[in-house]
Structures are given as C-alpha cells and as structure tokens.
Image 1 (tube, rainbow, N blue to C red):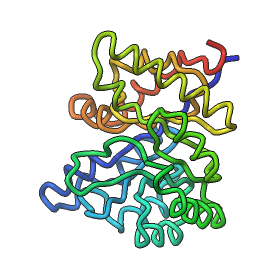
Image 2 (cartoon, rainbow, N blue to C red):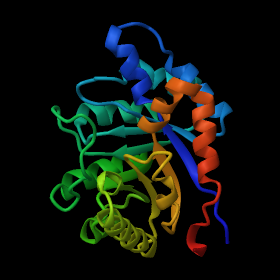
Image 3 (cartoon, rainbow, N blue to C red):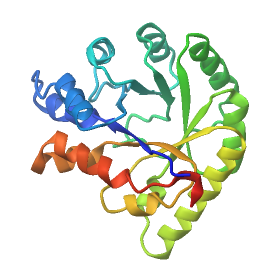
Image 4 (cartoon, helix red, strand yellow):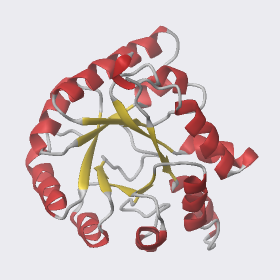
Length: 246
C-alpha cells in the first residue's frame, strides 16, 4: 500500500543568514509560512546551547503563530529541557551537540546516556510532547531507544549522504536494516541529515519511513528559486514513495 511520506522543513539556516548580520530579517515566521504554502507537513528548528542560529524568541513566536507543527531539536540539557516544557512544541527531537561542530554529527549514544535520557523522555511525554531520538542506524542503539519509551526515532542519514560509489549502497543497506529493526520494535521511523534533491531517489528506497526532515539543501535551493518553490520541488520529489510495499 502506498504511504504518503511527510516532509519537515528545517529552517535553521534561514536564521543563520539573519544572525550573520544581526538583523531582524529574513523573518522565520515568513519562512514557515512559505513552507506551509508549499505543502510541508511541519517545521523543524534546533535551539542550540550556543544560540548560533535559532533564538529563544524564535521558538516562542513560531509556536504561537506558525500553523504547522513545530519539531524542536535540542540537546538533553536542563535549561533547554525547561524551555521545551514551557513552549510545548508538537515534537521534541533529542540530538547530540558539541560546541565546535558545524552541524549535528552522528546520533545520540542512547546506551551510554540511558538513565539521563530516560528521565527527560518521561518528563516530555508527561507534558504531552511527542519525543524523537536522533540516532545512528545501529540496532543496539535502536533497542535502547525503544526501552526509553520514545515513540519515534530519526535515523541519521549523514554517513549515507557523504558516501560515494559502493560505500553509499552499503550505507543505504545499513539504513534499511535499522528501519526494519525500528519498525519491528513498534517505533515510528523518520530520517534526516544531508538529504538533498539528488540523493533523495536513493532515500525513497527505504521502507517504513514516516517523515523526512530536510533543511540545508532546501534553503540552498531557495537562494535561486525562492523558498516556496524549493519546498514544493522537494515535496514533489517525495511523491513516488511507497512505504512498506516496496
């Protein structure tokens, strides 16, 4: 049976352009509205500890005025957890975070941080927030994520996106094994990181996907054609997906 693959658009890099000059433009709410017009299913923002792009005020304003569901990416840090509990986004995606990284590198070490993460997942779920774990395609980590009680995992597709030739197919097979494992564990399977207009055709080979969260490539494309068209093009690229019937 054909399954509609949902698209979450990460607008962090719209904020990156704004922060480069400390201006009040480009406006993130306008960006979110472009995503809505183009058929996106949600907006993703990452409130980092260093506040390099998304700011606290952005989170509150988007939660208040954006009509699309907000997926708040965040590290398991007490101050950020408190913000999430007050803002009440539709979803929180727990991700690893290092100050010196350009972008999120790798998935969370659920096994190594199990006790701390279990407490945070419970607090967020008790507040009515859906919780996703950003995770490498590793079966042991997936089993640990299921034990946390989080209903969703987002598979880190960065190694696949960076690979070339036979290595890319190897990473794709690794992602498929992880998606099968997560599906068998009863988890919703999302994916993201490094997905673009070229490699999306390979990503669509994966079974059980519910949502793809894509940001950098869409914002980069928008420089030449506008954000609404860039989102529409990615939305169209997702249309052939057939879910678990492949």
